[in-house]
Image: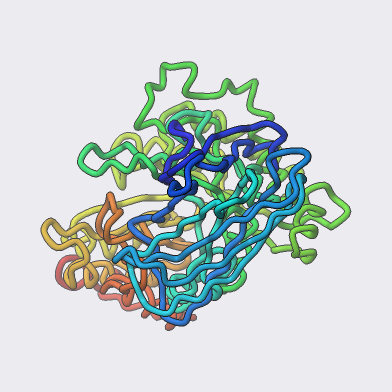
Length: 489
């Protein structure tokens, strides 16, 4: 963080240190020492994102890594509290710290009431010796691998066939140093290094400077989640180009030279090994050590997000050569850029055909009218070339983002996807989730606050298709041409 205690309010004698840390890739921790006066307290307070949602009778699992600050220390005590929006303490537990070596400590607190705007405080108990604390966390007992249970259920109820992760421009990063690196997202969650979020300061009217990636949801959790909801995973990895919206293609710092791509290519090969490799392999062993010795049976991978121009295909080719050589059965998804048509789109498709990718990722955020009039978009696509992956799409109504009109227009468009399933391989709506107080982009499929979620009209369209998958297409023609109704439907 640019401010090391971002997200935390402190009181009393709280300092930061990184001497002999608990975690080498997350070295900073806090030291709590006596405030030096009878009536003064030392501690920290965290309000979560827009408050912590507390539910009546729900148990909350608190964990912290702690040690005595002094080598010759004897005993320290901390007190963790759940506090409601009226500033009343509604649950508390005391934890003893008796060792000067780092230990994982736990406590369970039960909330006696429901409150959308709760918070958590951690105090140094009066008379306690100084203590060091790191990786403080609080999760509802019903969480699923760190994810809210209701949001996981929202995903599962879609009956999705594919799950694309992590995106999106986040793959590329604002610059190469902030791109998503999957190897930082596996192993112990406590030791996954922080990364900025590509979107935290992109929109001047909706800045979220505390929007970072803890990587608590990493690639292992992603593969587990895909498995749980019955969706084929489609990981997207960097092709060595930083976000082209944010950078000039002429800037040498915004892309990796073709001759220097090997570490990026290795990341792709190693991810496939992490997903599918035997437990005797380096990355297959890590998967097994994390709790999943069986392979995840990854079948496809995307290289690059919304890339365009000549720098993309010359880099993608290098990836494809080595992926095909080592994993010939893995399908490779390329990109046609950020637009649904135009010069860059046409160039992208031309290059993807030449390279022989299995799929081409198309993105379109358009008006409801566009979706209705493009229901026949794929009727005349080349059946002998790469398949289409509609990787990001949503109808953007001007005044009512998640309107019934937008959802109905998407449904109409999807009839064309179904009708042309021989060329449209798969499709994913985007974006998936948005917090009602923390959004930057509309529409979104699922809206949530600290206690509940709402499924949009667009959600039910996706669910309708997910629950009623077609198996055969019956041709409907007139004079040898596909029958089209009003607006191309």
